[in-house]
Image (cartoon, rainbow, N blue to C red):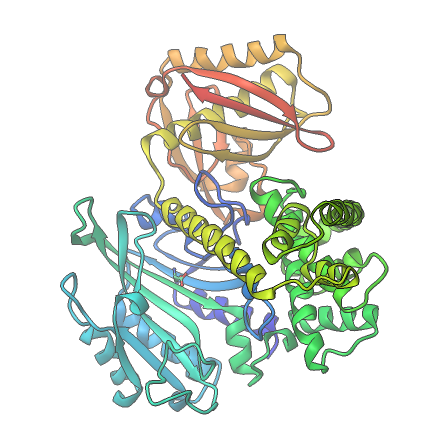
Length: 585
Ligand code: SER
C-alpha cells in the first residue's frame, strides 16, 4: 500500500465516523516555550484536551508532520527517523473506549485487511494510581482479539502523559504486529525492542488529571488521543521491515545511490544512506518553516542534521555538493501532501547549498586545529577527537586517519565514552524540554500570547501592511515575533509601536472570541496568515476594536491584566525579515 492510500483511508474512515479533519499544524510549536518541534499529533491540541472548545467540534482527525530530535544518533537502523508523519483521531470529551476499540479493530482488519491473529495488544496492568485496565482488554476480546494475545504492562509502557508535571493523562492500549521474526528469548513480548514486535498505533484514554500533589483524579472531560505512525503502518502493510524501502523514502535512497555510485544493498552503505535520507528529509521540512541553519534552537538542529548528512555523504565517497539534489527528490515525493515544501523548493535548495559550502570551510578549519594541537602535544586522545567533533563538527573517522598518518592511534572507546556522556546530557535536556512544554498554558504565556496580537496589529499600524507575521515564540520571560519587512524600523517607529501597545493595554480592552468560517473572519478584517493550518471553522479573537486575528487561543479576557510591555531588541532574521523581542515589565 502506498502512503497516499493509507493517509486517505485513515482520514476517510474517521470522517465517516463524524470526525472533522484538521490540517497538519506547523512543525514549530505555537505558544509553547519549552519544546522546539511538534512531536506528536496531539501536541497542537493540548489546549483543547485541557477543555478549551475546538472550533471544529469534539471529533477530530489529522495527518501531522512530526519531528523528534531525542535520538538523532539512533537513525541508521531500519526504522528510526527524525521526521515522520502521524495519523490520529481525537474525542474531546465525546465517544469513549468502546467506540475507539471497535473502530481501531475495524480499521485494521476490514479497511487495511490485517489478519486479526497478527495483531497483539497491550493494556495497562494497574498500580496504586489506577486500576488494571480490564475494561479495555475485555473490549478487545469482544471485537475478536484472542485473550492470549493481550498483554498487561505497567506504567512505563502503557501510560501516556501528563505532558507536563500535571495535567491530563491516562492508560493507553498499544497495537503491535508480529513480524514473524524469532523471539529473542523466553521473555520476548510486545514492547521488547528486538524487532519481533512492531508498535504501530497507540490509543490513549485521557481519563485522569495528575494534580500538583501527584494524585490522579478522574478528569471531567475524558479524551481519546490516538497516534499511528505512517511509516510504521506502511512497514506492516507492505510486509517490509525496512522503512527506507517504503515509497516515502525509497526514491530518496535511489537518488543517493545514483549520486554516490554505491549500492544500498551493500550492508556497509545502508546506515550512511539512511542517515542522509532521513536527515535531509527532515531538513527540507524544517527549512520549509522558514528556519535557517544557525547555532541556536531549531536552527541548530537543522545545522546538525545537514552537517551529519554531509559527513555521511563523504563517508560513502560523495565528492561533489549533493544536498540540494537529494532535497529535490524529497520535494517530489512529499510536495503534493505538503505543498509548503514545493512552494519553497528554490529557497530550500539555496540554503542547503549555502550550508554545504560553509561546512567545507569548517572542515578545513578543523584540519588546521588538528595540526596545531598535534604539533604542540605530539599526541591525540579520544577525548580530543570528541572535542574536535563537537566544536568543529570534524568527523571522527577523519581524525583517526590524520592521527594514523602521524603514527598515533586514537582510542575509540574513549571517544565513544565522551560522545555518550554528551548524548546523555542532551537527551535529558530534550526530554525535559518536551515534558515541560505541552501543558504550558500558564498565565504568563497567555498574557504574552495576547501581546503578540497587539504587537502584530501595532506593527501594521506604524510600518504599514507590508508587515506579515512570519513566526513567533513565547517563553515565560519574553516574546519573540518575526515579521516580513524590507528595512530596519527606526528607533522612533519602535517607540511608537511600544506606546501604541501600552495604550491598548491601559484602555483595558475586552478580548472576545467567536467561531466562524475562515471566509467570514477575513471579511471581518481578521488577520490570518497561516492558511495551510486552518480548518473550515476557525476562532477569531478580537481585542476591542483594535485587533482581529484568527487563532486557537487562549488569551487573557481583558488587556489590563497584561500590565505594561517593553520592546527590548530588534534585529534582522534573514532576507526581508525582522525579529522583535518584547517583555512584560
Ligand atoms: N499521544 C500519543 C502518542 O504520541 C497518541 O497520539 O503516541
